[in-house]
Image (cartoon, rainbow over all chains, first blue to last red; front, side, top):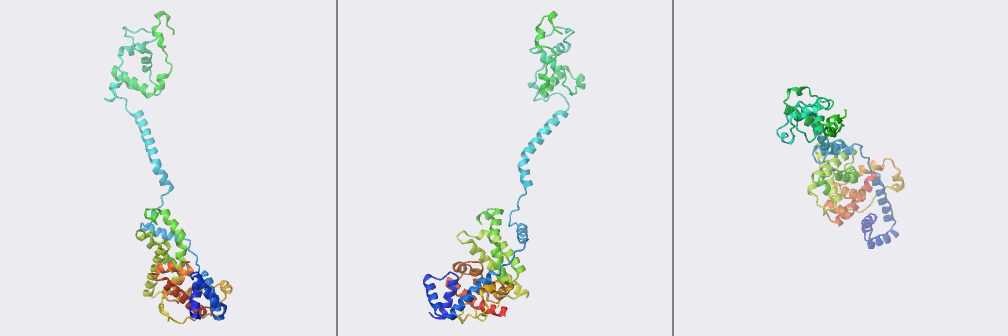
Length: 212
Length: 184
């Protein structure tokens, strides 16, 4: 092997790209050639030199690149945590808002006649029954009234729940007042559950046995 | 790349964090200037993103990336040459892959330990690199600087492994001469 061939193979050996056979040949040559041995030493120095060429990276390199990529729409923009949360919270928020609006409107809506669709579902109580309930206890009804299925309930219906405005009830027809009374119970079931002033069994007691 | 093509930002960020240093170092060694290197490296990643749909998983990503990096850097240097800002490319007296003297010259003081402790060595070395013909410089930088094998360098440059071996040897030969000059 001459020095020219040895040097080129030496370069590949130092780069780890020579075959084992070529590596052995180069080693044999270097053992007997001071000139090529010096070349080997200098070639190794090149690896030290190139390792010294590492340069620092600017701290804003990444941000500059990503901004350019976003401007060119090459990089999907990262969603903020707020946007992510809001998206997932949108449905519950909308439901809560709708519920709140429903209650608000149901409280402030004028108490007129029931909606046509609702009317058939509301039992109409004869005015006589209402009169009977209002007059008890104490005064007897002016005319005999049929016994209702639940006189005590109808009696409670005549009592407006606390805080419920019924000032305009006098302008309503008797039938309408019944409906309003039922609606009030439906809106405030607690008033229905409250112990009333009239015992349900009281009406079955004989006249003299009624308790005050 | 597959995930990035499907629209994953995280995939590109991962790709960037893995490779950006190598790309920047490659560009620095090819251009010899830090600011230019970063500008070129930015362009490399932009081109990678634009060309993502042309990437085929059959090719090794680093090979594909350095192919783009090399072309980008060459365009960058040619543009600078046209505008007269910098003239890093020159045809050395050796030409490309032409047989020449295999004499390896160098100062006796090229001792690895002394070089390692030389504060200016890095800049001097990059300066010497710029004096090499681009074909030799690229092969040498890819192999010795970025750690690509001869086979990978051959794939990036589109030449044979034997040609890579020859170019790298000649690059070393020339570089030792240049280093002698810049350190003198």
